[in-house]
Length: 193
Ligand code: ADP
Image (tube, rainbow, N blue to C red):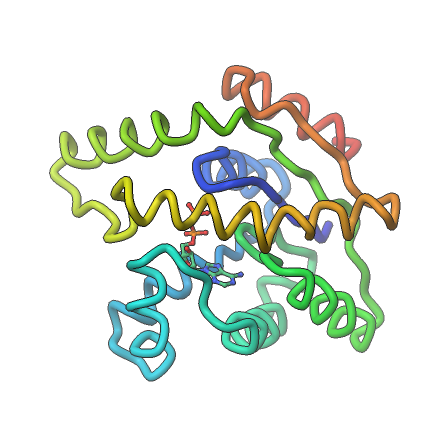
């Protein structure tokens, strides 16, 4: 199954992706995780991406499209994958459609986690507190200023991606404000699992 999970930062995409990985036995492809790995490794892509990511801005489309194009050719993606954090612009959604079409593939579902924006800043603060309590490093973009920029980027660049899939009749919306297990159940139902 080839799935896209959409939703603003803090919507719960990472949590729900991890559950889908368990249930479906397909990998989660998080462009955020892949870019953070590139930054940590100091690769050329990481060097280009770091300042933009820290500020909460999107990295250029061609970088993430290139990363995803290579990643979905890996053998563990043969039975499908869960895209988390990609596509994040309409240009990325179009590029994804084209590259899947070239491989004779299509998406099985696009699921959007719909959340009340006022809850997102609180979720980010909670995540920071939990990360610190666990003695782990906090993401450089998990601070109020960058988080605001991430929400702005979401509204301006990623909300149109939902409309792109809605216009094609491919979008399924799930209430992301429910308890975690209830969101999981709703996602599973929406994808017929
Ligand atoms: P979140 O969804 O919580 O904001 P992610 O881990 O998905 O976090 O992304 C972190 C950052 O990585 C983004 O703010 C952006 O700078 C970059 N990024 C991730 N995915 C993409 C993408 N598809 N296009 C452009 N930039 C991206």
